[in-house]
Length: 232
Length: 250
Image (tube, rainbow over all chains, first blue to last red):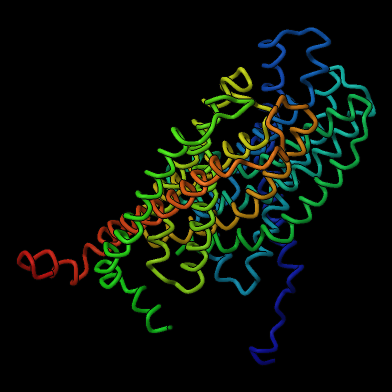
């Protein structure tokens, strides 16, 4: 068999392999997955302590508090997206591999979402119930968080790729990502508030879905460009 | 045409001609601003609703316009630098950021001062334009922070350009989402959207100031870019020769 005809793994296989590797790494280090979740729960605990525990207050501020806490939890988990691969040199191997870089980045981002966004979505009902959120609103919250965290993971991967290898990465990453993530927060939190107030909220769901599809189509290219620049 | 373009992109050539263009923009710019400020403060009639307080628009509107204009210049210059690897474009982008941030700050500050008599508060969270401007200011901060964090200039240029381009898409989405959000919260904005057409005596000073501020911005941008070029090319031969050359020969 000639070198030319050697079987190369397909694009999808490459994406899955990258995602699987990251998921396996996360499985071996469960702390990395759990810490942002504890952080999320703790931020949600801070608000009743600060603004008062009255039922009225909690129902009113619940959607916003949960969304801000979820956004911050996503943010602290983003820092580790590329950093360990950068430190041990495997990121460079991924860069020189024949796989298209946007898909490699997408694989890593998918693994990031599965280990940070999805757990947040699954944990959010427990916190939401303590904020006296009715069952149907909790479902809306979970749906908005699912769509929103997908966008946040993808937007965050751009920021993480831009700041990888910089010493002052963490604060800088927040400064870059927070303005980008404001539309997600605005639409997500207010959609849940609308649902809690028995108003029509479907527009917000569609907007979040559109945003998720938009970032899914465009962000991997920006991430790939940023990774190339960071690793020059 | 292309020869002229390539010549412009050459740092020594740009360094030589920038002061001329800068001055050409500065003189009419300052003249227009002088007319605009004088006519706006003394000649324009008082607003029947807002009294004299409305006069702050002569600073506020041009600043707000330039805050967005500067961002666009920054992003487009970054894109040009990224695609055609034009070093001068990156220098323009780097110089536009602090200017844009200052105009954004000016727009926010004058808007806030204006809001005090109009809305009775220094800061109105529900006003979508103030929120968009504030988020734009954060974008500028992020952009400048990213540049400052990367030591290698060439790398910082490219990374910042990617961020600016991502930001352009997002600034538009931010604008619409903030507008949607504020419509939920019933802002107390008393400014009518389609108010009566402006009296020419009020309008002309405003137009003069918008044009004047733009020219001033262009002039300052050229000056800043010139300094930036000198700093970036500090190790090259033409800079050394220019500096070592006796006075009057460069």
